Amino acid sequence: MTDKIIELLKESSADAWAITDKVTQAWEFYFIGHKLDQNRVRDVEHIQVDVFRKLQDGKLLGKASEEIAPTATVEEAKKIIEQLSERATFAPNPYYELTKETVQVENKTYDPQEIAKEFIEAMQQVPETDGEYINSYEIFAESCKRRFINSEGVDVTVTYPNSMVEVVVNAKNKEHEIELYRMYKAGTCDKDHLVKEITDTLKFGKDRLVTKPTPNLEKATVLFSTEDAKALFQWASMNMHAAYKFMGYSKFEAGKEILEDVTGDKLTIKAVKELPNSSNNIAVDSEGSPVHDMYIIKDNVAQNYWGDCQFRHYLGVKDSFIVGNFAAEGGSSTEDELRCGKYLEPVEFSDFGVDEITGDIAGEIRLAYLHDGDKVTIVSGGSVSGNLNELMKNARFSKELKQYNNIVIPAVVKLENVTIAGAEG
Image 1 (tube, rainbow, N blue to C red):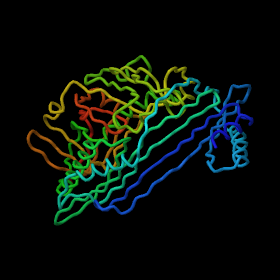
Image 2: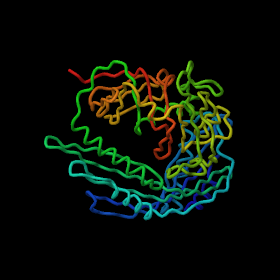
Image 3: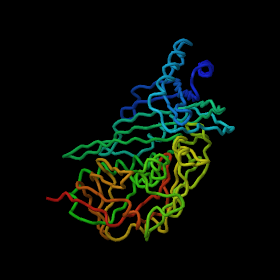
Image 4: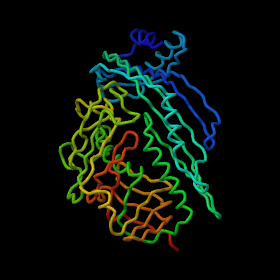
């Protein structure tokens, strides 16, 4: 069907076009406890077509997109393309060029059944008790094949794995019972990581049953040691996105420090082509641009903007792409060295968010550990808040690193003077 669509596009009034043909083979398993409830196999294909039209003597470029079913007739596909060609004139943008560079890709073969099997084996290794146990889990393992073709001569096919595990765990005592939900995304299975994450979650569930109200600390040192810490680094990465820069959302300037008067560890973030078990180990991005290792921020200095070809074109950025994998560097201290003095370590939020434009952070605490020397108090309630434009100036990062699917960050991030609203009456 894709070859038929190419011919129709060449015969249409489109000034440029792009096609993404993605075939997904998947195995899915649904467990109650560790008993298989059901499973199914998927084999699906989605074909997205983008049509571009030049307007005002090429000063503007309009775009319209829609899926064409792989089972569509030639007449049905032709009609959709004609509609797209008309719709592409409705809301044009300043002209930009599509990806032109083409690369040769060596693809691997992935078996979704084998990937799913590894996830099932990992789930069976999680240590459980009568009080903390796995309620249910679902496994989705995919092998994806994506072909990208455009009118500029790019025609590249990539294969990659994409997986997800959803887990519900229970914790109970004589008075209470609670559930905690987790979603883990990956390419292939990292058994050690998954077992540890769920084991920690079971402990968090147990501790949630015996919490005290978070005291009114006002300003405190906070340690981030869970997946929520990703948002701190995504804030910095997104401020180097070409779209954010072009639209005036980001104040980061390539070649200049992103923060002034830094006294803590300086931030370094790289785009990396591959990470172990990542779901984004793809040689070209979704627009056909080649992917490679590249500094985004190095030692607190902005290096390279990244993002889609439209906004890269507007900024005059060459040799960049839509980043799939990010890797931050560690700091000057070990995790043990950061775990000293009095600090709050939130490990469970109702939601933790970072406004990528303003840098504001906020999260309502569901579970945290208040450390004061050798004394540890398990607390709940209240919230953390602050602004990363100030908090990251004296941030400390552990030397040890931890990977969450497509992003590597320091295992522990220590921030000073975070605002803590307590839950005490």
